Image (cartoon, rainbow, N blue to C red; front, top):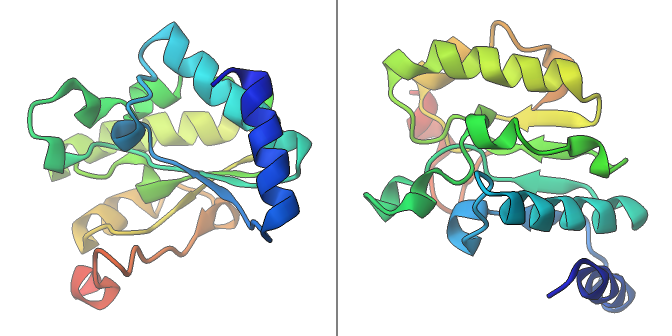
Length: 164
């Protein structure tokens, strides 16, 4: 689907249903943000959502369920940093602090990458969804609290279990 077709599709969807946001999961949708084509695809989505004043929620991090497939890492912060997030005037939420599926010893590097992205793009926010306590403890202190949303991923991860 071209960018124009995507914009038309989203406009029609907004006309039919009261959409609150658009969720993009590059790992599941096979949008390789490490490639130019993948970034162009996402930026077309961002542009269309911005034109419709629709916020975007994007998976941030790995998808461990894919094991060794390349798609497992399409949405890591190194790839997200290559996207022009200003393609949308709407809010974009990078889920999971951009660090879903990362080990504890990798988190300080991911925190610095996320902070750089948030500093660069005023329309970016992040959320806490689906993260274990050790990740929250590492990621929360250095991120402006006005840029963090509480998210639960409650259909997949029970938040009380993550925090306890």
